[in-house]
Amino acid sequence: MTTATATPVLDYHSDRYKDAYSRINAIVIEGEQEAHDNYIDLAKLLPQHQEELTRLAKMEARHKKGFEACGRNLSVTPDMEFAKAFFEKLRANFQRALAEGKTATCLLIQALIIESFAIAAYNIYIPMADPFARKITESVVKDEYSHLNFGEIWLKEHFESVKGELEEANRANLPLVWKMLNQVEADAKVLGMEKDALVEDFMIQYSGALENIGFTTREIMKMSVYGLTG
Ligand code: Y39
Ligand code: FE
Ligand code: FE
Ligand code: FE
Image (cartoon, rainbow, N blue to C red; front, side):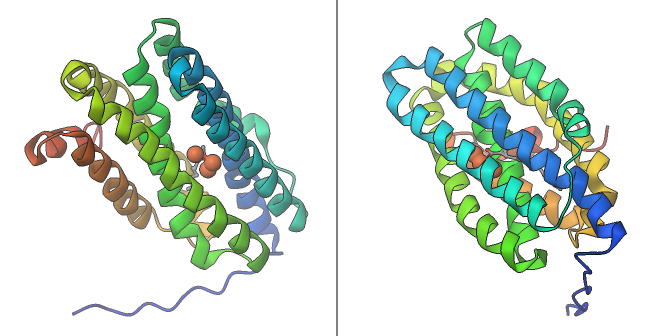
């Protein structure tokens, strides 16, 4: 039996909502900017996919503009300094992998982890969002599925040669996601987004991606809880 819980009434213009929004909105804006930059960087490692990666980068730039409009619509100033610090470790890991030419690690970080995080956050946000932001987020989340799919296809094609690298990259980066989620738990809740729901949706996207790439259920079980409790 399930217990019905009433949808909380959100006052989008309250100081409390706007304060939380200044950080979550900034994270999304910064995330979209970094996603843009990451796809441009990935094109250096995958010149044969230059055209497609440039197309994905342009979508990310459009997402950023959309979310900037969401902040303006609520008269919220995004806390970009907070957002830059929020992504710092994941960004450093991406940059290191890029410098080392580790394509699979870069794809795991951007196309699997960050995209799964985005899809989870946007899916959970949509029913709670103000009408203006809801419309924008609904169109953005569709794009994010196609970004996840790009990573899946490449990694599936190269699965045997990158499997070990992916396991290592998962071990190094997945714990960062759980820490990031803990950092935004309180603000997300003010926006009507529960941490449990975010974790659940992230897991569905991420473990689904690992399965599509070629990992066994047993491997996925081990990989997806990495760092969850630590
Ligand atoms: O690929 C993308 O477009 C992803 C970068 C965009 C942002 C993901 C950040 C979502 C985290 C929000 C946390 C709210 C609880
Ligand atoms: Fe995006
Ligand atoms: Fe996004
Ligand atoms: Fe994306």
